[in-house]
Image (cartoon, rainbow, N blue to C red; front, side, top):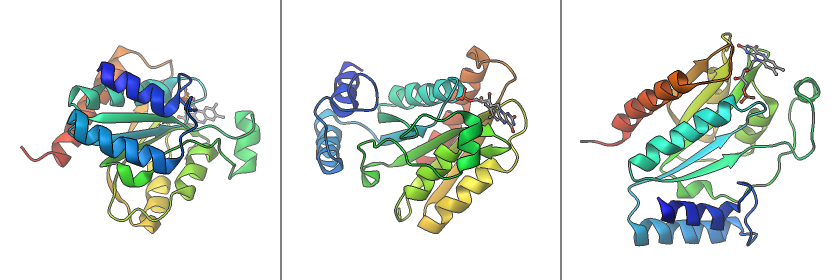
Length: 203
Ligand SMILES: Cc1cc2nc3c(=O)[nH]c(=O)nc-3n(C[C@H](O)[C@H](O)[C@H](O)COP(=O)(O)O)c2cc1C
């Protein structure tokens, strides 16, 4: 676990977004490959998420904790617009430029992408991120949303963007609550992760 924390700080810095060493994707790719070999991580997982009020972040952290318990190397990436906008402004804007995060998609065995639901849709930040992903080959993705109760066809929209890139959407789930997410929702997230894990690891 300590190795994971050290490695995470090296890649993303303490803020979770910016490496203290300003690593470029090709450096990350090299370091990641080295870490998987040297430290014997079982698999390499990335969790990209947008979160304004913390619910989606909680789910992202629960996913990370679950996969780390399975000895995976997990990288967490917060997606943020390059400029600060209110949710209403963002909704009007549609596609937005995002703050740059250093990652190389080719590194990962499994990629999670999470978003809050705004107006029955994933947020423009999450959609913009999915649109920037280049052709992925058969990479496995899992999509997740958090909302009050009405998710619309949010994960379908995300899946359709990924389908064009050749990605395989292994699963998707929505965590619903009118209130800030608590233990019950995080337990549910861990249960869903267990199901997803059983799909990718043949006993
Ligand atoms: C601008 C805006 C629009 C929203 N629209 C919906 C919606 O259509 N359906 C719904 O169930 N919840 C909606 N919500 C609630 C959020 O999806 C929910 O609180 C979510 O968990 C927030 O995630 P976050 O804490 O990671 O930002 C909306 C919230 C905001 C701020």
